Length: 125
Image (tube, rainbow, N blue to C red):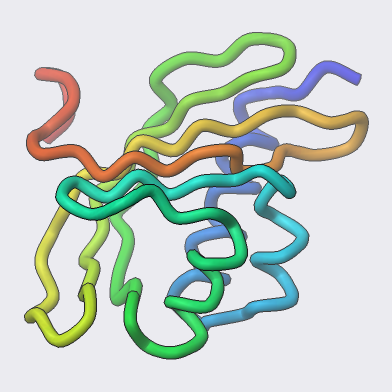
């Protein structure tokens, strides 16, 4: 089944709601078994370390701007989104995220999140 940009954006919206509401059951479904988070200045987190950090309030997603599709193929999609994140005891800060999704037969799943140090492309405001 070919996935469309609309289904990718819908999945991304569902994912951002799950992040902000700490919906661990939904996150477990939306992240691939091999999902990874790549923070700027910390070790890579596996799916379960990432979910544990969210569950234990070591990583808090406060807010997301509207996602922007960067590229999409039949089996992979890349989205940029500006998010307010709080890591450990630090104050929340805006950061650009690069989200890479893979398509399954029926839906998209997040494969990788990269925290970016700057705005990814000039066309984004």
